[in-house]
Length: 177
Image (cartoon, rainbow, N blue to C red):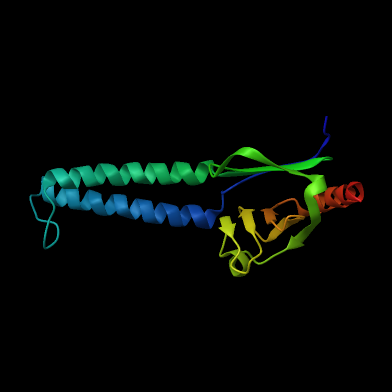
């Protein structure tokens, strides 16, 4: 049985993301609400080519549904990393629903390092490198665990616990030799 050395769960909870999400979804709801009010309650056309009242109502309900779905989706995204003495496990719900396992024997090199999320991967989330550096799964900030496999696959797992992870990685490297 493997011994758990490190565990981390990360979620999207950045204020800027939630402000932007609220502005976009809230703005859409307000716009449809104003259009619905003007057209149905005050009997004024909304725009040069107004939608029918029924279509406007359906659009309003769809916008509310989409806003709820989008908020739930971002709220539920979760990156989980577990490092055991014999393997590394990760999942990035809802994109990767079950843990993927990397046996320590298949690792060529492993480092905790600072990286440039926007320049190297185009941002945060489930990303592929624009510079041929493989897959990146991250939630925020700019530190991560870079794993290069013997088969050439490269993976970067973002972390908020870089100091703790660095200690674990150094002990893991000793077991790899």
